[in-house]
Image (cartoon, rainbow, N blue to C red; front, side, top):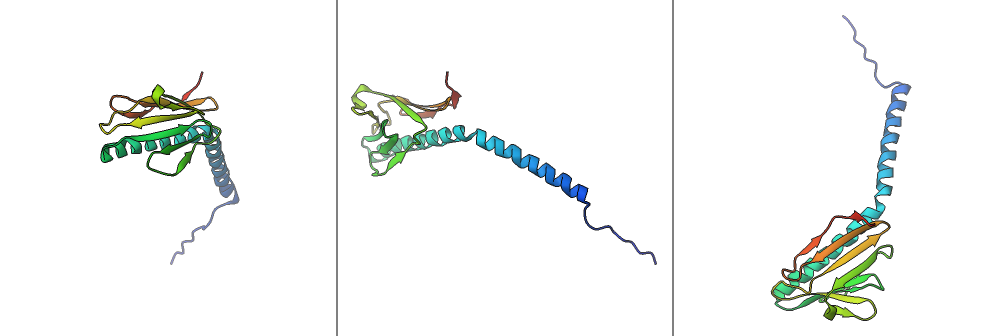
Length: 154
């Protein structure tokens, strides 16, 4: 009868090679995550604003009445007409709003208004952080909201 023996386990050298590869992999992931922090913050803030704009337009269409998103540039906040909550944009992101003259109020406050037929006052919201910018365009005729790509500013 022959006896077959297997060598169970790994050598120390094999374990060290595997650990070294894992450390290299985690360091690359860590570097990529930290370099994309600005991009992530501006992407999240712009997508949140687009969602709020689409919600506001939807409410206007469903309820057959005007609905407004109010943007406060001094406080870096925005509100939706039927909600008491004020949504905060991080202070590191600067906002610019272009809207109809009738929707501009003093103290850095501007409105984007949606009408029951789906149209709006239109406008553009720009979010800037470091050297990155995201632009949200609101079509006055259709009320369509479009988020552009995040680009480097000049």
